[in-house]
Image 1 (cartoon, rainbow, N blue to C red):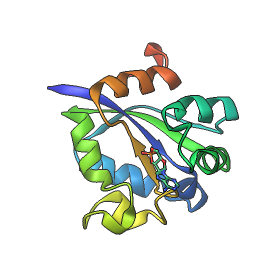
Image 2 (cartoon, rainbow, N blue to C red; image 1 turned 45 degrees about the vertical axis):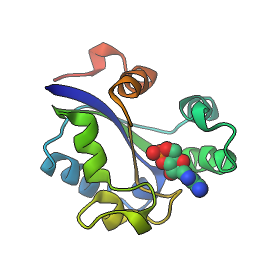
Image 3 (tube, rainbow, N blue to C red; image 1 turned 45 degrees about the horizontal axis):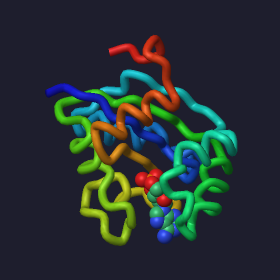
Length: 139
Ligand code: CMP
């Protein structure tokens, strides 16, 4: 079925001016960008978005990183979008990411790993709602 997922092009990518290169890989994987905006995350947004990780040792570093440069938040649509996006992103740790994936090609480290993608349909909906209203999504 055609579904939606949520994606973030992270600060390490905006800093290196590769948001187009990353988006091209998403599009070539069969995903369509149906909403997109470049934002500077506030602390409140970064802490709220990553609240599930608040007890992890890297939480502080993660929040600071996500606030450090602009990000591009996107809604992606396509056949089985969550899985399709996870496949093209590759493993969280770029050292473990498969050839041809975004993280293999572009990520710098497990923290500076270029993209975020929802890990389930349920979280996709929550994450889309966190950054977008329905009228901003144009399929
Ligand atoms: P993301 O998919 O955005 O979800 C949580 C993020 O935490 C993850 O990608 C990584 O960028 C980050 N992360 C996970 N493990 C570590 C780690 N050991 N050190 C720093 N950041 C991490």
